[in-house]
Image (cartoon, rainbow, N blue to C red; front, top):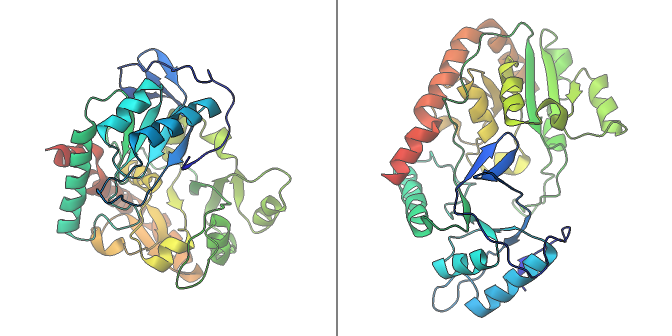
Length: 344
């Protein structure tokens, strides 16, 4: 067994679940296939070292045994890091499992790095879509951050000068950078900006992060002037997520240290949603700035002084920055435009 697995509540043991032929769609905070609510509970499968034949998965007998163990654990979904062959999808469907297909273009490589790289990534995703087309086991393909600019639309300037973000405060992720293992949590990334509320008193700074009510970290942030909200309370549904963004003047966030140190070109799908809503974004540059318009609606920062100045620019020139943000979302990050190019 080569899957990284965790136990889930029993959901039918070895008995195969039939898969609906309906495509998955999001309704509120749940996925549905037709009228059936679909819960995605699963494991990651791979990546595996390529065999001599070039195959990137074990042989069918081994894979089927692994899938059987997943179903006994109660899993309904597996995530791959490379595009699976059709026979693997067939085996998954036979056991009632859905597959989140990872497309190996490397999410931590800047997809805007060059026109050739962008074409290559789009071609890779298009080939993956063709390879998986129409198969009932496929739940989704994972692609670079895009945004539906018809779903996320501009709203008037809110009355309150509230800068927000939504994030995980802690993480167990690790990656080696230059022989070191930096702390990849948002907590560590925000440390240099801890006194920003005092440096920019005209702004309201709010973090929707997963910090418990009795966590000393909450009191520490509040003591420095930050407001702390519970993300599952302020954004429990897709609609409330959009409303939370629309009720913000801008996003203020920082990037995990790994993305900053490795210059990955990281830009989050959350930032794309703020931009599409006409909300400027203040964030650290991971090398993405050079591949976006000069007037992108994004204020790039590297230290506390830069953050203070960026907040001042957003407060003083919000209307222009809002227009820039929306334009960047429509011209660069729009899902329909990008997917049309990918699937052309």
